[in-house]
Amino acid sequence: MYLLMTVNAAFLAAVASRDTPLVLSLGVPAALVMVTSLRAVVWLARRRQEPSIARMRRQLRGTKLAAAVLSLLFGAWGLVLFAQADALRGSSIALYVFVGAIGCCYCLQALPSAARLVLLFGAAPVTARLLLSGNWYFFGTGVTFLLAAAVILRTLATNRSAFSEVLRSRSEMSVLLHALEQS
Image (cartoon, rainbow, N blue to C red; front, side, top):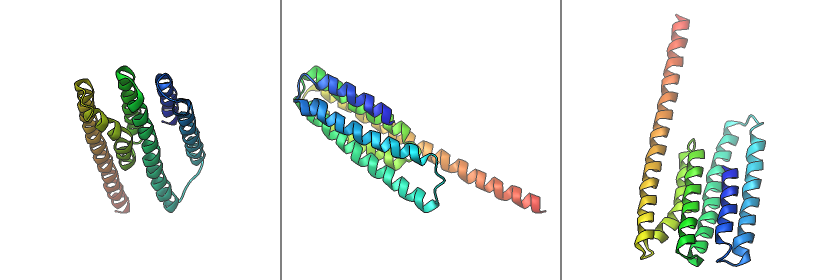
């Protein structure tokens, strides 16, 4: 996910470089890549740990906070770039932001609340800008993004429900097997 966002930021910066000041086309993406790289290092370090329940809860809260903050930063950067771009680059910028958000949602599907935050803070601002642009092409793109977001949200809910059902079923089977072994 962090590699996806790094590549996405690099290409988004390249698309915007002709229309924006250097700080927006180079400085902001460099800062975002540093933050996502730091987050990736933290995530990789955690893979070798066997955390307690309390620590897992803290890490999950941290993941949700990181999802919200990083999505807000990427989404805000996308809005600023969109406002300064011509129509062709504006379309590309919106697409990069939305596809990046979809990729992150997929990666965060095990934690649906974090995935929803990515859509809310990352994709929704650019989608709203498209819908309010007064341009029919942008409006249509915004409607498509809304429909795709609805499908993603529904899929997240369905996956979560199926996962919960598997856990419940396994728990019931474990209790049943334990009872059979005891008799």
